[in-house]
Each structure stands twice: as structure tokens, then as C-alpha cells.
Amino acid sequence: MDRTFFDSVEGLLNSSFLKGITAGVAFILLSLTALPANAQFEAAEFEKITKENRAQFERETRNISLTGQGLYEDTKLDDRQTNEIRARLQALFGDPTQTLEDLINKDNFRPGKAIQFEYWFMVNDSIPLMVLDWNGPFGSGLTYGGASKYIDLMPQIKREFVEKLMSVEELGEYKDYFYSPEKDQWYIVKYEDGKFRNEEIDSPAGMSID
Image (cartoon, rainbow, N blue to C red):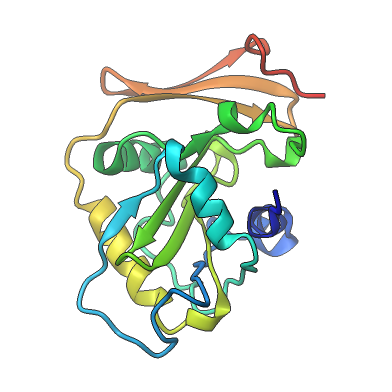
């Protein structure tokens, strides 16, 4: 399967620019099915892509390239620790679209793709959006993926997305795996009983890094 879109996300994550800021940002929009580039809408509705619908979403976005144009303005979310944001996402949208467990056994997996989680959305039935961590629980903010054709819509979508997450009053419990290539170390990252924990562990069964 052509992973131009998803490899572009990895390129953003590995770029020196993104590593110099707390959150790289961008949005992806379909060229054929999305709104016109200068379109406006009253409010953004975010439909999470489930694990079961990943293949369809990938087919629809496989020829999309990424940019960060128009989305570098800081928000209140960008300074929040990513483990807290993950708990806000869990409370609002449920489980991620995919985690490291879903990626690690794919043929094209590389350690540089060892994200903790990815949430994919369709905004207003036509505008795809992807958010993910860039350094597991040790980073802050999120990385967003998107297409430059629709940069005029991106600021509004990001603002509304952040507002929804910041309005969460009760964080959602979760447990993920994360692998740090820099430290060559596995972690269980979780929020439970009102506490965040990053526990060093051995390689989980069936999840080896070559």
C-alpha cells in the first residue's frame, strides 16, 4: 500500500524544524472530495476514524503530501505534556485509531515510526485530519498532518480542535506502549487512578525492534 501520506508525517517528525519546537502542525485535506480551498464553515465536527476503517482512510489519502503552512500559531494545548493530551483525547474520542502495537509488525516499519498513538479524523464529513505524538510521553503538544491547498481552513480547525480538548474536565484512563530509539528503551505509558506513569519495561511479547 502506498504510504506517501504517512511517510510524509514521519518526515515531519524527523525534520530538524519540528524537533526544535514543541509541536509540529499541519492538516490533510482530500483534493477531490474536500471543500473548496476558500470555503468556510460555521463549526467543525470531528469524526474519529476507527481501527476498522483505517484501510479506507489510507486509500483516500495515499496521494496527499503534508505541509505545516498556516498552522504554526501556538495554542494552550502546545505546552501541555503529551501524556495529558493523550488522556484528554481518550476522554473525548475513545481509543486511538492506531498505536505502536498496530504498526510494529508491518513490513515497512522502522524505529523512526515508533509513535505512541495516532488519532485520525474526518472533519465535517470531507476534511481528513491526523494527530499524533512526536516523542511519546516525553514531548509536549501534538503533531498535525495536512495539505497546503487548504491552509485557509487550518487555523479554524485547529482552534476548534484545541477548544474541544481543553474543555475536557475528567481525563480518560489509558495504557499504551512506547519505544524510545534514542534510549533503546521500552515503556508502558498510562494514566490510571488519577496518576500518570512511564514505566520502563523489557520488550513486550511479539513487539521487537530490529
